[in-house]
Length: 381
Ligand SMILES: NC(=O)c1ccc[n+]([C@@H]2O[C@H](COP(=O)([O-])OP(=O)(O)OC[C@H]3O[C@@H](n4cnc5c(N)ncnc54)[C@H](O)[C@@H]3O)[C@@H](O)[C@H]2O)c1
Image (tube, rainbow, N blue to C red; front, top):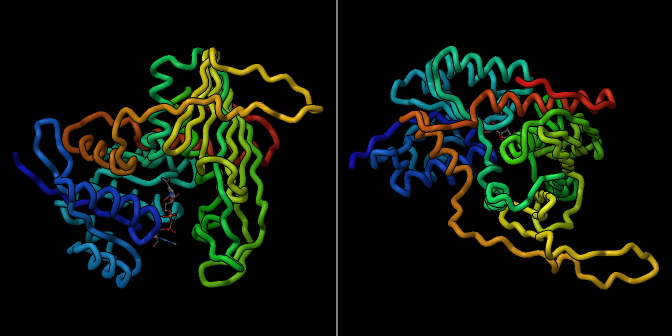
């Protein structure tokens, strides 16, 4: 069977996500496995063209992985007709300008979330891509996590009965950067640079809720900056102008209530960095990144409130692990393969810029809800 190669312009590959998840764990891993397999059995390899602002960093990366093409000139990379796809994992604030350029050049676009900093721009991107007739996609990696795939399996199998509520707990302590280096880039903590946990995480929660539990009808959120002063990559103190924690309540189609805490200022006392508890009339589940445990209605204990007695029941022992029953590949890589099939043979890909815009909309409305101290209905885009 034939193997063809297509060029993929990758902007922002020196960053955390661009390098580790998209270049190494997706594009290079796809080539190592022999390419993306299309429906006729033929294969497609990806020729990454690394684009960034720092020529030396790009050259070092290219050398490390034996990649021939790298440039600081986005226009030049876009001018090559063999480069069919443009991928963007730059800082959020740099995304719209570059993506619009790539749309104009007729490239199919795949981009990290959030697709833009405002819903207006996110919708404009979706419209520009449609008008130019280019395929478009946004990263929705959490849907492909083993824990959430197991949760989806439970939903599809009717395990929960009627789903009542979802409780999400996401977060970990991000060091302030003074006595220990911060493990996230400092732009995340500056609103003027596209930072903030609402803009970062609500787009994720949006597609998780929309794909698993139902469309989001309203949002109430309280976004706060718990740690107002941090120290950047160069050791300079700065004012944190963006929210570092958000406490959100979402009403979903069908009456499900989702309550999701997102925080970079919380110490982990959970099994995983994100966990969702789903309670239904027939059973409950707690899903994390990898694992998922369930408790069926018939195995539910009957606790009685009595603070005078010590707790003897070991509540967590009454839960059962959901088996893998499948091999789980890297979620970012799976979505890359889906997108390449979408570009080359029009395979379905529901994670488009319109979906990306709905995620940005939820972030924007979440911030407005917090500023105005009220619950806000989500207009359907
Ligand atoms: N899907 C996910 O789970 C996930 C997780 C984290 C971040 N993200 C998204 O990925 C994108 C990149 O995040 P990251 O954590 O990799 O960031 P990062 O700071 O590590 O990388 C940012 C990249 O953008 C480049 N860049 C371009 N213009 C820039 C500018 N003006 N200032 C600074 N850098 C500039 C940098 O050189 C670097 O390559 C963001 O949009 C973020 O929201 C997604």
